Image (cartoon, rainbow, N blue to C red; front, side, top):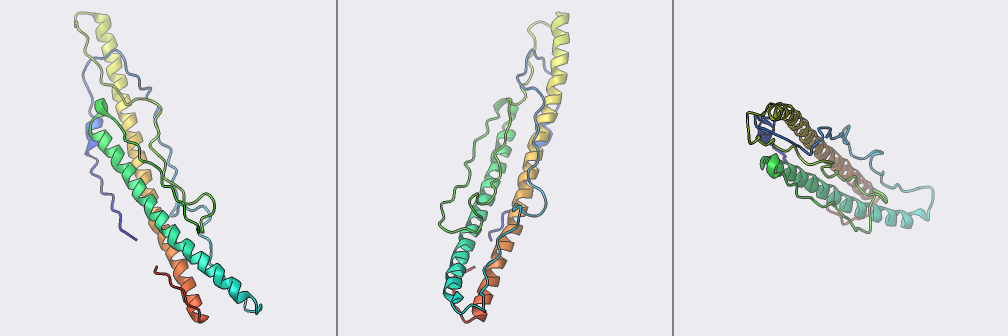
Length: 223
C-alpha cells in the first residue's frame, strides 16, 4: 500500500486563536460549532473483513464451485484494496482543503468541497455499502466574522456593544478552531485505520493464495 503521511503544521491554529481587539456590531456565527468524531478503534470496518472461502473436502463435486468462489473473492480483494487506497487519498484531500481554507484566515475562509469516492466494481467483499467514507467538514454557520470598529469612539453605547462583541468573537474563534482541529484529528485516525484494514484485507487474500497452492490450484493475482 502507498504510504500516506499527513504531516500537518498547524500554525493556523495559533493564528486563528489570536484575540482580536477590534470593534464590532454583528457576527453571524453562533459559537456552537463542533465536530463529533466518527472514527474509533483500529478499523473502519464494523464487522471486520469477510473470510475467504474454504474447500469442502468431503464433497467430490465442490471443487469447481470452490474455484469460482475463490476467484471471485480474490477479485474482490484487489478491488477492495484499491477502494481503501482511494478513500485514504480522499480523506487526505479533505484535510488539505480545511488546512488551506483556514490558512487564508476566517475573513476569507472558503472550503473547497472534495467529492466522495465512488466505486463501480463488479466484485467486492465489502457488501452493498462498500467501504466507509470519511465525511465532509460539516458546519452550519459562517466562520467567525471580525468585529468592525464604530465610527465614533465617544458613544458609550457603541463602546459597550463593541466590548461585548469582541468577547463573543474571541469565544467563536476558539470554538471554530477547536472544531477544525477535531475534524483533522478524526481524519488522521481514519487514515490510520485504513492502513490497518488494507493489511488485513491483503493478508486474507495472501492466505487464500497459499491455501490454493496447497491444493495444487493456480490463481493469477498479484497482491
